[in-house]
Length: 150
Image (cartoon, rainbow, N blue to C red; front, side):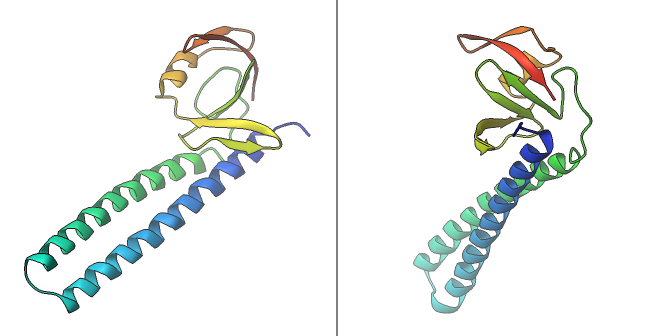
């Protein structure tokens, strides 16, 4: 079965949704910990534990906000038009890999193919922006040919 943009989109959407759920669960646990500390402790130990928990909660909230932005960007491309050059929403096959230019994500395996979700603002995205099928690109110290753009 041939790899399709919609299948890759669905996998990335599921990946981001899972990460958002996990972060929300972590934020809930930290919040519970903060509330538990308020009831059980007093003094310097309490203040230190509370500050550490607040810092952790702040860090998790930032990650959650970033992931929500990534997911919102992805949702805009659910019914993405076919692309003829490397641009936002393009699924690109090179001589050595598949790249999906919507938002950064973790490497995925889709229908037996490894796909790297990337932002166009990434170094690879900037190198490939505007390129078309058949063109050669240098990624790191490797030359790759663009075979297909969906």
